[in-house]
Amino acid sequence: MNRVSIIIPTANNSTRLILTLSSLVFQTYNKLEVIVIGKPSVSDLDNIVIQFKDKMDIRCLTQKDSSRAEARNMGIQECNGNIILFVDDDLILVPDFVSNHVKHHELHDHCIVLGEVRNLFISK
Image (cartoon, rainbow, N blue to C red):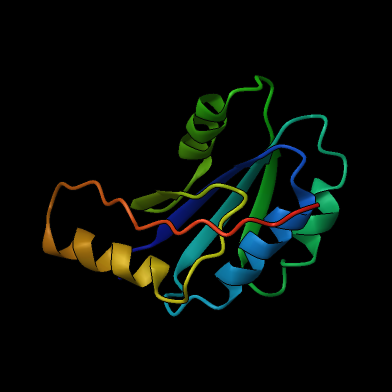
């Protein structure tokens, strides 16, 4: 069974990040790790991640650079999965999001999978 690493860069989107992580709790595929990478300015990141420690394999890292690409690269270096998913910190994932990605990777040796995104706007 494939292990999936989900890499989530974040920057000051605490409420949205909580919704994203909550949606990961309900994934039908459970052999996964979640790596949240925040900017040094995200002060409550550790507290958010602690809320999910008993529900999933999750950890947080602090990036030195401020770019999303740098955060993703840091996540790649730190992850243990053989499938890597990049997820933004403002997405609510359907329960079969991870399992659908894994199915495509199992059918094709070398592939990149892009999922459908439907935007849900939340006002502050």
